Length: 349
Image 1 (tube, rainbow, N blue to C red):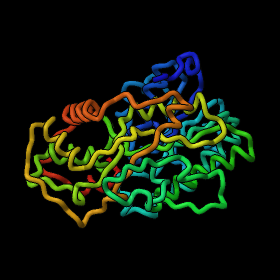
Image 2 (image 1 turned 180 degrees about the vertical axis):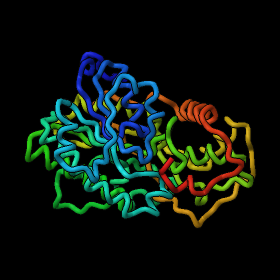
Image 3 (image 1 turned 180 degrees about the horizontal axis):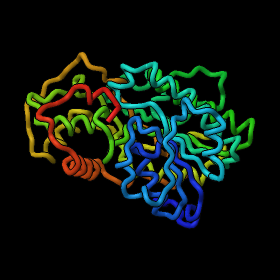
Image 4 (image 1 turned 120 degrees about the vertical axis):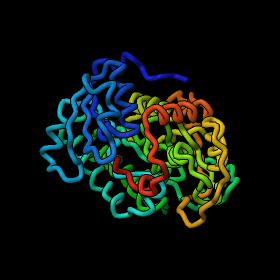
């Protein structure tokens, strides 16, 4: 796999919105390690300064809410940056986005403010963190499917064709891509959209599937409750692979094209739970809660375009990634003496 170029990133002025969040903070660490001069904007609604512990002394941090700040204030913060990685969003796992439709719809305005400020501030390029939720649910409705979602399944280059996305969150992400493409067409900035799929790794919160499973095992939940029947399938992708793919997209894509970042492989939730049980040496009886939201039944991405255009492939195996994530969780958390259901649906730390 081709990695990001040190010569490209060294000395570059980079702004990361949502840079104290899960994926954003890992991106910041990688940029700092390559010698970039990084500014982070985050409102700390779900991100934390602890996530930036390794880089905080080497970056400029601005606490700012991009949904509510006046445009001149945002433009001023964006000035003198060459590239903006836009990861700021109202987001969470399936339980959160299912129960907070109005909140995730706020991403429409956040994205517009970021793109408008980037254009006015003279930013050269924007990399937008999109999502596999932009894809039509009907293509993901059968367990055991071998269909891999292609970028053309959510094609924003021809808006005369029908589009369909997963809940309000998916529609907001899709329209974020449309907005970025519009700013590229009208104002001449450069950019790309990276479509993340079921990210996991250290610094993630318990609203997301893998951390939720680790949390329940950490709290010795017995019987162990899994949402749905456990057969729902996802393309679980480790955070460092998403960071590498995003940086390569900045290096190689300028026309607003979207690119899939995933593994192209499916794993069921029950299989993930069993792997976690083995790692943590905890083997409880399992109970399935069919009343809880599970989302689409089968999702995995075709990554052939990322391989061809970026020279990118995922480097971290599921087994290694799960072990690293469990080790992080055990080292950084204290037991509550039981599972707090609120943590599974609310993104606030």
